[in-house]
Length: 355
Image (cartoon, rainbow, N blue to C red):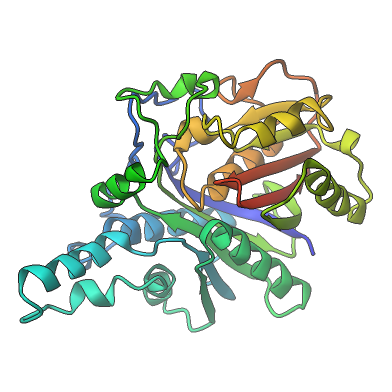
């Protein structure tokens, strides 16, 4: 199962939306929560419709529109998205209204738009796309499940161009809930560019909307080839992790030494970063090491940001200094591995290669 990445659209806490810039000017935060840098939506949405849409819906429609533009397609053969939290802002609005209005005189808008599949449905409505449409809600494997479905659908010959994406938003209420259970740093001010050096528990909160057009045909806009993906649930040892990675590489006739660069999901949480360090100092000690969560924060579909980063590194043959760990050990980048985890429970491995 392989696919060409022919278009990308992403809105994140960095300047990543519809721009030729590739992390030359990194937006540094000094906070425990990184909000997305949102564009003007006038080009992508009717202002009347936009007024009733939650932030995550608008971000996703705009990001997917840029994605289609890059891939030079108007309507995809299928839409697959992944989200852990759905349209959280609308969910909170509806639940708050239930309490405030004593379960009476409730407007249905927030409830209708609070469901997890609202984003993929709204994208389809905007395009008048009647094709296969599915949303995966698998916590830390949500985005990965959407990508896997896309790869399988292409392999079966049921589609030529598929939109896959991952989206999650951060709200004040959700931030406070997660803060109570130890997700975030206890320090008041967290310099994001120093996140990798912090040895305390917790990380920084993030959000984003990342969309990709996967195709079985290479085009002039192709970024890279997505050659495989593997999900590892609650691995019991480093040997199990290494074995699963080896399985993926062996299926593509590759070894650990063939990986030129690895993108790690290091998030500054001393409880969980040890897994990345074991890989970085062990089987991938000869590969160039990079990381990304100091740029986008921690959220359950952050794998989309990592795939954007890896795809651009391969296409541009350039490693931004803002993501580099140590020295750049390779001149030509052919094979890139992404290793990302959420709370050391959901471990995901992506393999991308040069077209």
